Length: 199
Image (cartoon, rainbow, N blue to C red):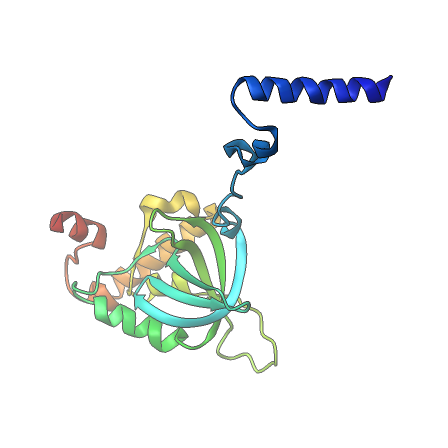
């Protein structure tokens, strides 16, 4: 009885499909049976990447080749370095390049921006570590701010852990008070304002 009912249902379905002009053999070619898998961009968020830096575009954007051979454009979380055309823009890029280009780092990814860059915190090992494997404990984003190579990008602090808010604010105050990097000259123009003025 159950077998008969099953075949009756299949027959009814074939009849309905034929009425609306759909060949049962082509059923699985319909759009809702061919949904493409979601982009793997979502899977890139909230993860940790390890790899080698193969390019430094400027003081807050790099390209990483991870340990699986995949390349990722990374926008540094919580910082905004001067644009290359701004005062100290080239210096910020130079400092970051000398520190991490062709070196292995860790990236703690938290988000993705509208340009499909991953947003994350760069971490490296302490220069004093003599072990074969050292912990990635040095926050390079924070160092950029503390040494005056970038602003703390407080407009996007929601993406940062709350514990970082105080650290980054204090780092910027330290750089300002000691006239480090971009703070060497009075009244430097923040890059977000510079970009707005160029529009």
